Every structure is written in structure tokens, then in C-alpha cells.
Length: 199
Image 1 (spheres, rainbow, N blue to C red):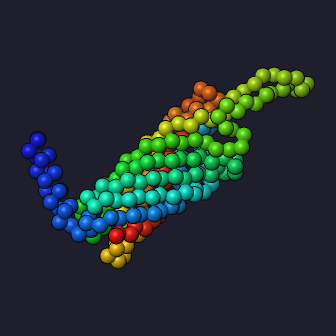
Image 2 (cartoon, rainbow, N blue to C red):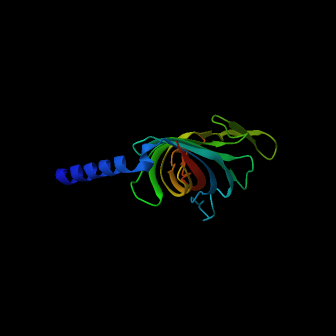
Image 3 (cartoon, rainbow, N blue to C red):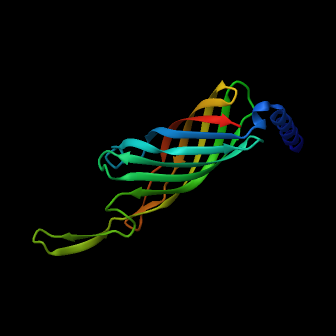
């Protein structure tokens, strides 16, 4: 098994260093164009009905096909226009040594939180009964949680130093807390469009 791994590593290294496209520094910039939050409520309806997404993706690929990147985006909610699902992720990625297209796979980790004017962490809401008397206090704030993601991107070279690419991100997020205890699944998928320049 060790011999197979060493052989594959050696062959890949030779291919990488003999491929001109890996001899340059590459900078990519993209933006999200679509998103889904698959989780559903107990009635089977979408838990987060998506209303647009904004943000950016930035990546820098080093000369040996490995790169680092940053994603930052916010997903809107139809039922609450001022509520956003904000995600910030740091990535490491690798460009596969194949011809014709630029195929990238990557992994990332970061933070995610729900943003809105009345749901910051620690926000309390006082309830009253029908007579207007105090009936208790409820924690209605969201606490930020951690996320992980994997993603892939496929780029089509337009010119020797330029390509356009499509990307797909699968984000796992299951530990954002609501009310100080309830954990909510905000896992999502994000598609993006971008371009890369080689220097």
C-alpha cells in the first residue's frame, strides 16, 4: 500500500511541476448566485425560505496547485426581510492536475450566525397576559455556531491567463443556538460564479 501511495505522489508531483498552469500564481474572485437551506419545520415547510444571497469568494492559488481562500456571504429570509444567515469560512483547496478544465476541490471551516435587529445573542422578550400583566421572559437571541464545508469548482479557460468558473458549496451547520439551548440545523448549499487570473 505504501508503494502505491508513494508512486501516486511521485507521479502527481512530476505532473504538477511539468504543467505550465501550475507555474503561476492565481487569484480568483467570485460571488454567490443561489442558495438553499434544506431544513424543514415540523409541518414539512421550509425552515428558512431563501430570499436572495450576497457576498464574495476569494482564493489565492500558490504555484504548486494548493491554495487558500475566504468565503463571506449572507442569505436572506422571505418571512423576515431583515433577518440574514451570515457565514464566514476559511478554505484550503487543491487544483487537480487534469487538462482542458480547471477542477478544484476544497475544504473549509468557520463561523455562522443569524443576524437581525431583534435577535442578537442575549436578547430577552417580556411576555404579558391578556390583562397586560407580566407573564414571563423568554430568551429570543441566537448564538453563533461553527460550520464546515466542502466545495468544488470547475473553470473553463477563456484565455491563457483567465478563466470563468462555477462552484458548488455544501455547508454543514447544526449548532447555532436559539434561546440559549435549542440547536437549529442551518446547513445549506451555495452555488457561485467567478473568474480567475494567473500572474
